[in-house]
Image 1 (tube, rainbow, N blue to C red):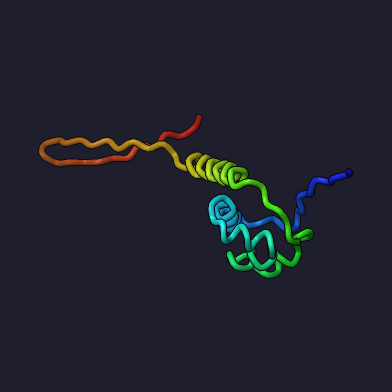
Image 2 (cartoon, rainbow, N blue to C red):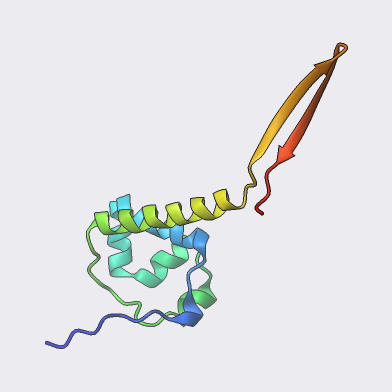
Length: 114
């Protein structure tokens, strides 16, 4: 039996916000999973994936989905990736408060990479 692995399609990447919704639903929503197995095109449309993008996708036909844990692991990986990107964009900052002659003053100190 010659079983080919599906190959990624560069022109049909799912936007990150839709990927998060899809993975969450495939990880824990039995009704959505059943709907996706029967009609993946309509299931994608139901979560807001644009019709043009769904129409570009090849191989969207009824299928048997992997276990929910597979989708949960993928969801957690995507969330971790998003969190790392977000945190790397926040510069470390420290607030310094001083009080001289009854006047309070607060300054923020940003730490920059060398």
